Amino acid sequence: EIVMTQSPATLSASPGERATLSCRASQSVRSNLAWYQQKPGQAPRLLIFSASTRASGIPARFSGSGSGTEFTLTISSLQSEDFAVYYCQQYNNWPLYTFGQGTKLEIK
Amino acid sequence: EVQLVQSGAEVKKPGESLRISCKGSGYSFPNFWIGWVRQMPGKGLEWMGIIFPGDSDTRYSPSFQGQVTISADKSISTAYLQWSSLKASDTAMYYCARQIAYGSTYYLDYWGQGTLVTASS
Image 1 (tube, rainbow over the protein chains, first blue to last red):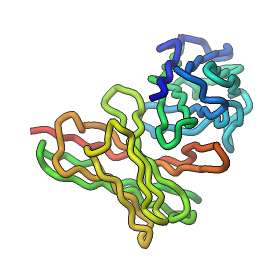
Image 2 (cartoon, each protein chain N blue to C red; image 1 turned 180 degrees about the vertical axis):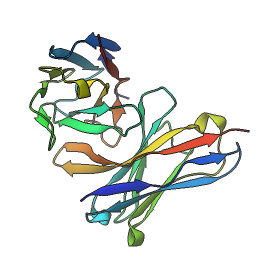
Image 3 (tube, rainbow over the protein chains, first blue to last red; image 1 turned 90 degrees about the vertical axis):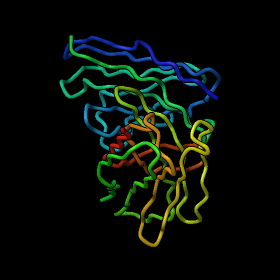
Image 4 (cartoon, chains in turn green, purple; image 1 turned 120 degrees about the vertical axis):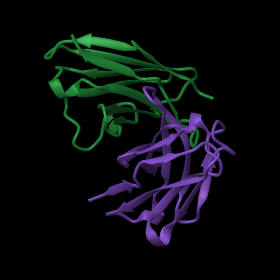
């Protein structure tokens, strides 16, 4: 099983700041990685697929990068609505998707 | 508009059986895989398995193989997740999600609103 490890577990930041979230795979997943955002009481929402492609309707302040085992989600200028939990997910080993444990982005 | 609408919250006793549903609309339901994801209270997302409603091809995560059954009825655009004997540890929110697949790219683009299952004596 491919293990996905996200860091940090919690990130404190202020509106307007840049946030960088990391995701590491236990073995190469090439660019077969997605990012999801989950707000309290809501279902996850797709942000990024293929490591760097924004999903439809996702603001340009969200960007993804990386390949192989190291990936990054960057939010260039935090808005109040961006404070949430973020999950990475690999699909290189379909149908055995695996998710990271999540990074909680909280307001400083 | 693509929508996945899940059945309502359930409260059951351990040992009871349960089936929850996920109804798709706004797209060709038989032609897209539907996956199920568990989220235990205060925890992260866990992949359970996936079904292709067109031919009921079903794949399970090893962690959930034998613990649940995934099925679908394409005639009514509905996927199901069922338990024959619930455990207290099955208490969680369960989400269905539509999978997009092309080439080696797969992702979950639309999600249901979730079904909260509580198994408690």
